[in-house]
Image (cartoon, rainbow, N blue to C red; front, side, top):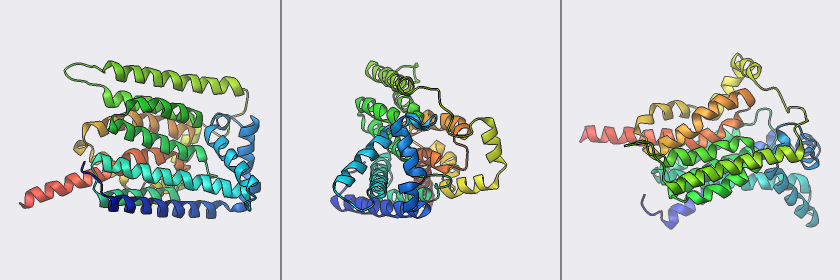
Length: 327
């Protein structure tokens, strides 16, 4: 990948800032300040802090404790509406990180500047439509950050940094368990024999162990004797499958990118294919049974990580083939 110029960096940063404010605006308009300050948002937040939240919300502590720290700072500074201001500021920070990391990740995959901006725009579009039955859901958006960061680190060859990413991601949300397997898939050699180098193997084992320790430790500390936060299982999936709204919401969030991405699979380079197999099958086996189809924020991870860049990589391949035929 060629060196990115200062002008290009400025454009990516400016686009990330604009997309961040845009998505936060739509999210705030969907909920309203009263909802944030006195409604379900602050009530669910406080329940996690008090240790009284249902399963699995109680174990998603990282983002909630981070926002609580921001709330206390804003109160000390006498900022008006400190709770709502802290919530929206944290969401703005999350969205800015998502767009910035996505831009670097997409560029590292080989997308040109124009396609990176298109990718950011597609992601922003999906985020403005992933609001059904949702508060600000900080853990979902932090999860997008951790998955994008992990993929970028693997592309950069910074495997050791996967360990701290796993620590934070496991404290944030239980669905971060695929991150160690991204490392395994990226470094596993299938030919001439199945093999992984010792260093990568040790990092993979350490990452898995840390995830299990954090996962189990949170449940031991807070206890499992608590109600489930909502319906799960086959009945949830069947209810959504027959509901037209679920498919409309999925299409509004993901658009045609999953279809184009899968159709473009043969054009992808091996490292990107490995990320697909580490995340997508497991994601679409588990998430529809635990989060359903209507709450489409759950699908922002595969959308940002695989579907958007995969479809755009396919567009590059198609353009190259047409150029070759015309010459």
